[in-house]
Image (cartoon, rainbow, N blue to C red; front, top):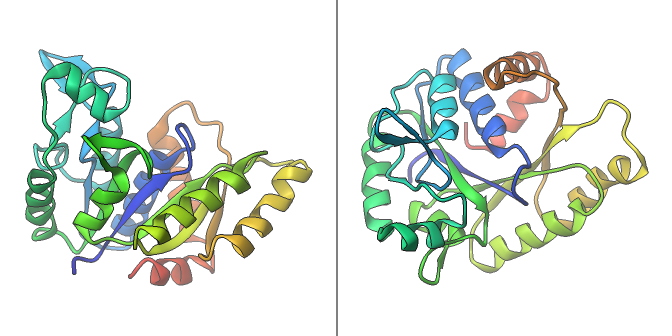
Length: 238
C-alpha cells in the first residue's frame, strides 16, 4: 500500500486545501519527497485557453513539484458538484484513470497527499462518491473540520460515514480556530475527540494572510516548532 493520506472536509470552505498544502510544505521542509494530487476539480478558471485548478497549483507550489496532467486528471468548469459539472461538459469521470495517475505519481514520491472535492459524500460519477474514490486509492482519511457551531454534528457524521464504508479515519484537524473562541468553539474540540472514534490531530489557528502561500508557509513554520508534530506525522504514517 502506498504511503499517503486522503484529505476531505466536513463541508465546503473549511480550509482543506490550506491543510493539505501546509502538510505538503512541512514534509518538504523535513526533506521528504512528497507528491500531491487533486483528482477532480470543479469550478476551474480558464487561463490561456485551458482550465486551471488554483487548489492544485497551491498544492504543487507547497510541495515543490510540477502541476502535470496526473496531478489533475479531471478539470471541470462549472462550480457545482463534480458529477453534475461532468454531465454538463460531457465528461465521464473514470476511477481507473484516476488510479493510474495516482500510481504513476506514487512511484515518484515517498508520500502522497490527495485532496478530495468538498466532503466525503460528494457525488463524482453516477452513484460513486468521494468515499468510493478513497477506497479505490486505498488511503486513510484525514478530516478537516471547522471550529464553530454545528461542527460536532458535521464531523461526527463524516467520520461515521467513513467508518461505515470501511474507510479508516486517521484523524481530524480542526482548522481556523479563533484567537478568542466562544463557548461552542471551546467545547467542540473535546466533543469531536470523544465522539468521532478518531483522534484530533491538531487545532490549527486562524490566519489573516491575504496570500494563501504565505498562510501555508506560516502554518508550516508553526507546526515545525510544535512538539506534538512528530506524533501527528506518525499517526499519518510517517
